[in-house]
Each structure stands twice: as structure tokens, then as C-alpha cells.
Amino acid sequence: MIKTIYILNGPNLNLLGTREPDIYGAATLDDIKSACANACKAAGYNMAFHQSNIEGEIVEQIQEAGRKGAAVLINAAAYTHTSAAIYDALKTLDIPIIEVHISQPASRETFRQNSFIAPVATGSISGFGTNSYLLAIHAAIDSLK
Image (tube, rainbow, N blue to C red; front, top):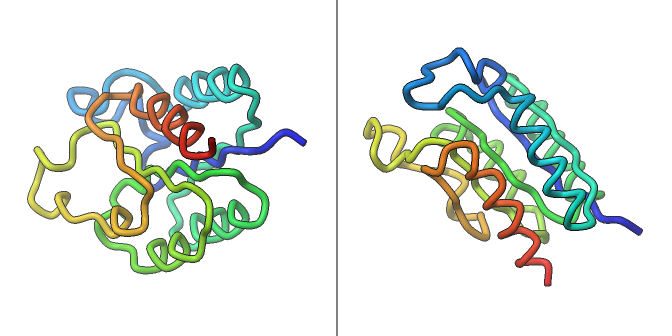
């Protein structure tokens, strides 16, 4: 049975490619999805890729990943810094959780330097642009070995 890596994306990431390209680059979320699908497939994994601007939908995807997934990569975007609900959902998982950020939150506004996800994550990858997703896929797979 082929295992699935869940890649979950939070608010405003649907605007990648046009939203603050000086911070997030020119790649769209579809570009990221395609690159992640190729990386997962090459490693022998399926991928479930989701984006939502709605916190509750992200919580539901985390819960599904707990039932069906091998690992979770999550770029919760602004919810990283505000969501106890996402923290609580992630805390229930017994699979690798990799926190992902395109930019480097530690070098940005002070409020972005606190992560509700980091305490429950297996690890965090940030600051490598859209390559952060590919690095996170490799980290998740390594965690599964």
C-alpha cells in the first residue's frame, strides 16, 4: 500500500505568485503543488495537497491526515502565530509533522517569530523559498525510515 504525505496550506497562500513577490517569490501554489507531487511520486508516496483560508477546514485536514496519512507538512501561514485549534489538532497526531515556511519568520515582524506549531512539530524548515516544501518532503520521508 502506497502511503500518503499530506501537504496543508493556510490563508492567503492561494495568492502566491502575486502576493508580495519580494518575500514569497513568483511561484504559484499550483507550481508548488506540481513540484511536491513530482517529489512525492519519485519517493514512492502519494500526496494530498490542500489549501484553505478557513481555520476549521485546516483542522479537518489535519484530523484526516491522522487517520490516513504517513506524514504532514504544514504551512499554516498566519495561523502559525495565532491558532490554538491547529496546535491542538496537530498535537493528536502520531506521524511526522514538518512545519514549512517559504520566508524566514525569525527575520520578519516580531509577531511572526512565535509559532504555535513548532512545539508539536518533528521539525521546521523555513527561509528557502518554495524549496522549503521539497526539503520538508525529504525530511518527512527520512523521519519515516
